[in-house]
Length: 90
Ligand SMILES: [Zn+2]
Image (cartoon, rainbow, N blue to C red; front, side, top):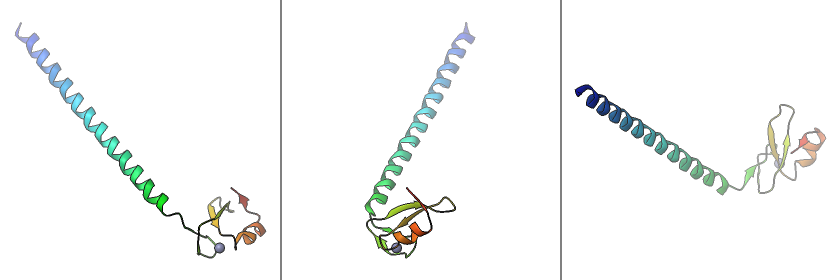
């Protein structure tokens, strides 16, 4: 009968370890999400973006996809330049 008790104890210990690791993993996930949302807030605060052509900061940028497939933000002054290059408007 002793070994049955031993098995039960072993199982409960395993269950405890499993639960603990699960909880820790859960905590890590939530902190990750919190960090990500904080980072996102910080990014959204910077509403002035730089023009990819003249490097001037402008509130309103038009976004185009260039020949390499990269996204470029273009200010109103440089917009005709981008249109001349036949970039795809996003
Ligand atoms: Zn510009």
